[in-house]
Image (tube, rainbow, N blue to C red; front, side, top):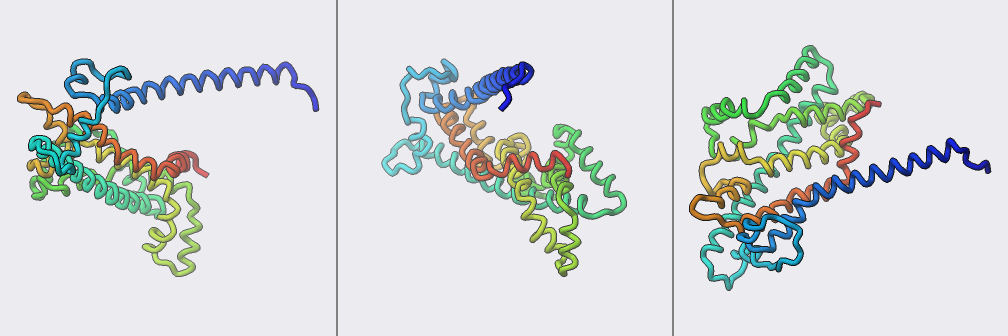
Length: 300
């Protein structure tokens, strides 16, 4: 076997240096991303007054305790006599349940609606199809702040203010999700449709039984994105909801900060516990995420 030439050795050396530098860069970036999460996790085991005074840090010398989480789960402790903790804990899990219901409903409806819109724009050729897709893309350039007032007036006229429908319906046709589904579907062979029609399959059967399973990676990746957007959304739900019993977790945690007193113990522990649903969704759909993000990037 021939020995490596000087040129090959130089290329191998440059490759190793490039790998080392890129790895070091990613480690630094991951450190910046992980710092607030780790610091917030440690802060949830410290008194709220200490976190406010000293800020979030990676100081492992400071004593840690489970008092904040005991306070958070006070309603599940039959021996707890602190009525304030019980009331706050019940409110917290009421907000948590509202956010879960709203997020799950939003994700399911948004994915279904956007899938069928993208399916129609991709798999069928009709007049104004390209123009309609252009209009969908054009809406992505309009900031939500411009649409807030018209949308608020619309849901008020429809009589769905202070309801989950008022929060979900205005964002049901997400332009970004439609665009993603369409780009993914352009990589799929349309011969599948012709073969299914020859076998006598209906158009509904083709879209649901044949094409929908193939687009599973796209569904998984967009489920994560939609869930994150819905779970973290605060501005629009805050405009729609009036009753405290319908508040989402983000709005409810914000109400803990008032001019008359701040419940930092519940706020910090509750914020960290609120990350759990998104983390679970990511772990469930993680194996489909990369496939969904890359499959629509290159046609063919």
